[in-house]
Image (cartoon, rainbow, N blue to C red):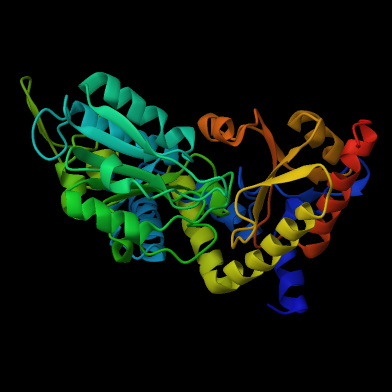
Length: 414
């Protein structure tokens, strides 16, 4: 995009005008949560002040307006990922979406999702806890074996033994599209092809891909996928579970109650098909409308242009980190997603984060909900900078400049 276009884009985000510690804010924590453009803030405000009502329940004007806005947002989000509206189920976040799939399989007593001793579930060593802990719980509940695909020293999946790890016993393969620590983009099509060969269901964590690149779930062939709204310019409190229609309708619902039932007697209940099947109770309507506005914004800018901008920032960050003595880049040197996690020799990640904050640079520190991955990398915690469509070259350079001064400040330079 041109300089003029980028300047105009930056002006859409009111929080980016803030100062921190006397310096202009350099917000490099978008992998944790993104900032919101005014159109998203306004969309939520407009709904709450003009159209607020329960959806799918009333026969009055406000109820109709609210339902239209709610379902209109669903249609926008579905189109954004190449899906049909009936394949998009609202969740409070991606963690809930992944739990709904995992626990649904854990509750299944028959059919394609029933798990038991002799079955296996395969994940990867780079998973976020949201795509790891639920499967641990399902394995404990059902007696299925939990296996994982390891990573290489470079931070990519080691698929050399995938045939023995994910074999005829495997009922589920769950994996991330993009690592939230390493920025590794995994070969989804290859993993899906292998899963189909052995008859396994595929579950994709797409939280770090949908905001940053063009994604088409049906084209990928995954059975289920999850992503969150707040990482893609949308509000918090809204996430998405995508599924193939047959896969969704065969999955037992784990959250039950109003709005998701077909019939109820004192003895039993039957359930509606997806998406209502997984939307028990009052839904986050204003947040869904806000996410619809976020999708409009991203589509207007263009996902190809966003991906190109991020790739430029990714190379600046990765190449810059490589030049700093005593700082180790976690993950592949060549990357297309503008996230870098680093280990600073002799300085704890929390101290690094506070030092950067004093320079007005906002990053995330800790294990980033990926403790097993950090254990594999030989570190307890790391410092992660994650840029987005509104991030600038100058902000990335400020991060690198501050990072280069950390070890000297703490007196650990060799």
